[in-house]
Length: 192
Image (cartoon, rainbow, N blue to C red):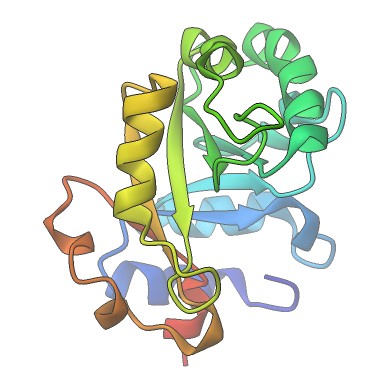
């Protein structure tokens, strides 16, 4: 997001038919968050913040001015920091849509078995789940991962997210468009 013109980006996102975009909190240093969110909203595109490196208590302030919040959990450290931020986040933003984006890390026991009791506080706080998968990088289809997260961790709402890294395209995800909702990581790869 750094250095992107918010209006040009919002025009592009709207022209692509995106209903929502998320900008990484860590990449907003040179582009004011409010400018990105306002430009997107003015074009009918919701704009949320994705906190890839959540810290203790960072979720609530990171979400200010955005339409939704996404916190990343890919391991125990991110889990601990985001879990510790839940109460403060919901106190500051009781109705703001929120989700956890995960590859499943942070929600399993050391032996790899699923730990639904670790997902439960997020489910109870109204967080949906976004299942990240990168077929070209880790060989995981996000549709399969979404099913696993729903079945074994108890998330009532799980949306698959296809990673476009490593040269992947949407054609590498044949079942994605059959889902009721889906997203992509690296949509800027589509932006030329």
